[in-house]
Amino acid sequence: MRLRKLTLREIHLPLIEPFQTSFDTSTLRRVLLLEADVDGIVGWGESTAGEDPYYSYETVETAWHILRDYLWPIVKGREFAAAGEVFDLFARVRGHNMAKAGLEIALWDAEAKLKKIPLATLLGGTRGEISCGVSVGIQPTIEQLIAKVERELGAGYQRIKIKIKPGWDIEPVRALRERFPGIRLMVDANSAYTLPDASHLKQLDAFYLIMIEQPLGWDDIYSHVELQRQLDTPICLDECIHDVEHARAAIEMRACSIINIKLGRIGGHTAARRIHDLCQSKSIPVWCGGMLESGIGRAHNIAMSTLPNFSLPGDVSASRRYWQADIIQPEVEVSPQGTIRVPAAPGIGYTPCIERVESLTRRREVLE
Ligand code: OSB
Ligand code: MG
Image 1 (spheres, rainbow, N blue to C red):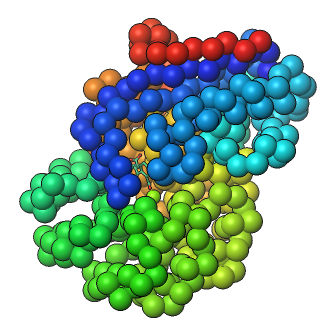
Image 2 (cartoon, rainbow, N blue to C red):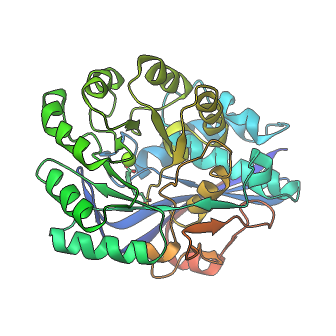
């Protein structure tokens, strides 16, 4: 395989409704798409770098810079046997995993298309459908939260996650538990708390949540050890886990008992498989997180979620929850049982709508 040409593209996609977390409110996604021409076959990728450096230090601007000035020169015209070799070629560039992932996953799509097999099969996936949950942003009122959760449950979603922050935590969870005593429920704090909040967070133990995601510092694995000692609710790490050694450290230290895998945060499918395999060997379940992806990133998330240790429902949900119209055909749909059927077509298995992508494009750069 040889990468002949790489197209970087920024498209703008307005969200159907604002998505509020403890760190920001998102209304318009600036999506960085990658088209990798490998031996005449085009693989598609998406970098999940944000508009602003609030979830991680990467942004669309930094990812564009790193891709054009550092990653492209490493792989341009280079012969490689499989997409699985590329992540290690990028090692000299420290961090910038969302930039790396955008290109790396495009190469995986291209390899699967060259081999005429689904990406899920190439990755070693073992399931034909994946289980879906939803991530519900911070709402203006508890009444609106309950109404929203009711709609998502009605649509079939198997697990509800709500975003929390100081001032929006115990009461919304209590209200949801009173209304829906039997559902699989969890919370995600996106690093909004510090260790002195442990006794406050301890109140969450009353609501038998399946987990609390990333309560403490985005780069602070160690403080979660002490918090986990004090909580019965299992801790899941998201922001803290940037590579397989972070995962190993967090597991060995008992900072968490569940890990959220996001392709962008850890640098693509090769890194995801390594973390997946490590977690499987340690009996640590993983699930696939989301970054408000367009259909391209979503399709990659679906393929990755077919690996066997993705044993908890993820944040991968239907296109229509985010966009008036997605940029792929067909759109991602969720069954009344809260599952997504894994497509059988080669590569990511969904077709990018080129005309729609063109009409949404704000910036484009072709490297060859
Ligand atoms: O922490 O999982 C997160 C969205 C943006 C940034 C961080 C997170 C999220 C979500 C949304 O929770 C998941 C989704 O629906 O894509
Ligand atoms: Mg999270």
